[in-house]
Length: 592
Image 1 (tube, rainbow, N blue to C red):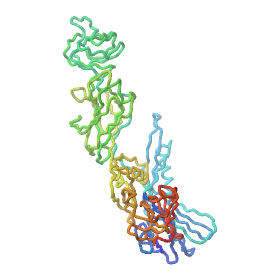
Image 2: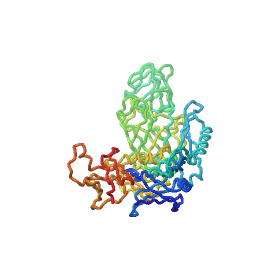
Image 3: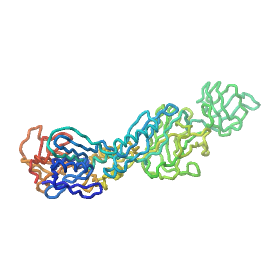
Image 4: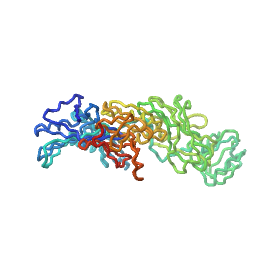
């Protein structure tokens, strides 16, 4: 009634010895992934049964009497019973491409994470396909990690035989898995979508934290009151007794001073005296001992580290508010203009009141309208969009160890972009987002067990596209499917017999195309019986009868079939709805 086809790794059909009989016993599918598992029993003489061990990793198709494929996948493990001894082979613990992620302590006592290069066994990969394994090794240096990697590959590059003494009938059992499960054999890495420098030092840069005026004068003619600074605009009220402040822009009095007496229109200094200077020059004053007072903007030059273009969605800087600024902190991306920010490309703001008084990563929504291109130089600019205020301003964290290799940092003094007095980098993070079904297409196509992807329904939902490479395609794909689409509907995926993945929105309850009658017969939308052995996960099943049901049973139908399994010996199709076992066992020899 049901037949089995086998193909080897070269896609050639395998001729099964005539002495062997392959009998499919049961198979299942899932709404996410399609064909999931299958069990095939093999009967024949003892001397021929060991041939089945050679089929490990072969492709399998089960067909019904009409020739319709009802299940497809690969052989994952084989057990051969010789009567008293059982020999087994499984791909569960096999790995033929290995790397080690390790954590080592550097000279400064900090933990540093590293990953060895991958090492491969080509013979095993040719026979079974490539299965990656990323081993975690804490407190290990690079040399020890490489040794561990090589040992793991040597131990696991081939399936490890199992032997057990167990009296029983002579025969073999083949267990298969669907192609979807093979997505766990490869880790997914997508380095596009992030450009960052997250090393944060102890240095900070104030932005827009100074007072600038042309009404400031120093001393009086003839050296009278030569320890006094005056402001006819009464703008010096931000200084208090004991404050250190720095003057910039004066003709003769630039430098650092300490206040002895303070007022809005007059400040008296300790020890250091002023040279008489009338008002008129644009003088700037900032609190603290500053090498540069007039810092209105900070700009970090950057280029993409990965040769892929991507749309930037969010930007982050490590910043805080000082006091209570009432304006906004602004983040912008500029083109390069002869080694300084040129033309504005995109910008975003956050309210100063929303920032913490402690340093934290501040997020800016850049809207995904700008595509960053590899090989192009850009500038990330941070500024305030309101007036300068020495009481209420912003600070960004810096890294004076110059750990970023993608560009330099500059500051804007109100007139031009200049080098900071002490070179530094500004920690930042730029991230991209990509529509989830577009990401699914990319990651699924990275698997050797998938020949293509057909996106029947796009999700309309975007999320981070960067992947570090420490999770498998299966984990990533199922996480993206779980997000659903923009209208809140579920996304499903199934693998076709041609190994193409089809992604679509789950059918609505109104899209019922299967019905079950009181005798357990399943019919399709046009009234025809379902073909024998066919699975129905991912579809709605409706009742085709009006027999009164108890209150606790009535809500069962219609139901969405999460998983279905066909058992040949009982000719029974069982279904699960919503990960809960259904009371309905349907089919009982009635499918065809």
